[in-house]
Length: 406
Ligand SMILES: Cc1ncc(COP(=O)(O)O)c(C=O)c1O
Image (cartoon, rainbow, N blue to C red; front, side, top):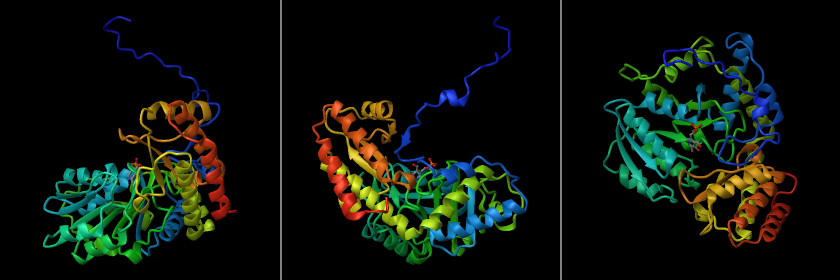
């Protein structure tokens, strides 16, 4: 090719079936998670993004989402994008120059609110706790005393380090009493543990589809209270987003009119994922998640490994495990994937690995396969552990507590 030749050569890559491993990896990381067959089937269909069928899908997705969020909110939207797009919709619609946000930061994702809020010109104050600890209600109370914030942001489960905001409902109550709206990231927790949006008085809650809902990545859900809706209508403009503008989204989700071409396959898949949750019921789903995660944690500790977060603040949806001294976490994860076809997550440079307990991950065959792969991989790294004991402890937990539900 001469230096002036501007032709771009035609690539001839292999088909995607040849690219994918013959034996799919079991996705036991922090998401995406495996999806039920019904969800996969629905996600292979394309229909028109407008019209009677889509209108029905939209109405039913909203109805089922209300159950999952435990809310009667009218303004519920699906968003074409990752969970961060929903966070961006919350931030970009409720905050603007002159507005003040208090961001409760306990890790990577809860901290992301601050970056976004600064990006739309809001004034941001951080309440940051040491890594591995949750934000507590009394800390928030002190921060709110004598101050005025328009929005308080927080996460229910900080996936990056495995911490649970146990005092979420008290924190939301304090924020509300101070006159602030609340925006809650329920990305890894929705559908895995109780979130009572209306009872707790949360103004905006959102989640992605690829975690606790066990659907395909690429669609997020968000619900706005009436108070949040009134506040966002006061935006002085110009509004920074088009796709993520809540008032424009209401055109599609409220009026069945065009906003942008909706992610139809993702919405059909989400419909099925939500339908399966309704069929299972939240109560049984939470019990399945709780027992699955506690069984896994018992197995991990039973084999001699350390969980990274104190029990009372530990997130069940994503379990963080200390990498034993001398072991290489990345190499262990690679071995798990290559040898056992089980994939778990690292943690943005922290000395932990993370195992997801969301949706279809919470099935006993997945637990045994994952615990075995983890033990084998870390033993190869020189960690002192007793894999058989860990497996026995997990089995015992399951027999005692989770007969028939996993
Ligand atoms: C708690 C939490 N918030 C936000 C995100 C961002 O989600 P996404 O990658 O779908 O944008 C994640 C992803 O892991 C998360 O766990």
